[in-house]
Length: 180
Ligand code: ATP
Ligand code: MG
Image (cartoon, rainbow, N blue to C red):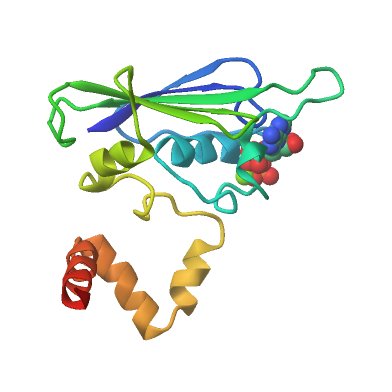
């Protein structure tokens, strides 16, 4: 499984449709300060189901929509589409290529789709949850996060390790079952 393409339209500084194509292996995004490198990473997190505006470096979710510049008016919607190669079947769905998309209007209304079929945010989160990617997985290491791990107390550090080992979700399920 690897990320194949990411298309942004009206997302943050990407007013015009912008398509990025990745190959298996390492991809580097380089550019001057403020050119939109982190916005690309925000788009990845967003399409994979991020619902914290703060994690996307904004005050409210609407901040992901292109806000306009001196030469270009603001847009009314942001859309991000991610295509994932699934020839190894890592995602529990019968397709060798999986496309997930997320669209948001200024009204706050959102739309989600898997392979073009409208779905819920939860469906996207569930599709990705066992694959090692997705919202709560620490697949995106932000600036300053390494410091956070180094300065974490034993409990927090244990949670990082349990998550990486894939046991955290079982512990959460066990705790939930015991509460019932
Ligand atoms: P650095 O090297 O400093 O980390 P970067 O390449 O990661 O820079 P980003 O943080 O991705 O840069 O991009 C910042 C730019 O995105 C700023 O110019 C900011 O104005 C613009 N931006 C962020 N949100 C929006 C939005 N909603 N509409 C228009 N532009 C936006
Ligand atoms: Mg940056």
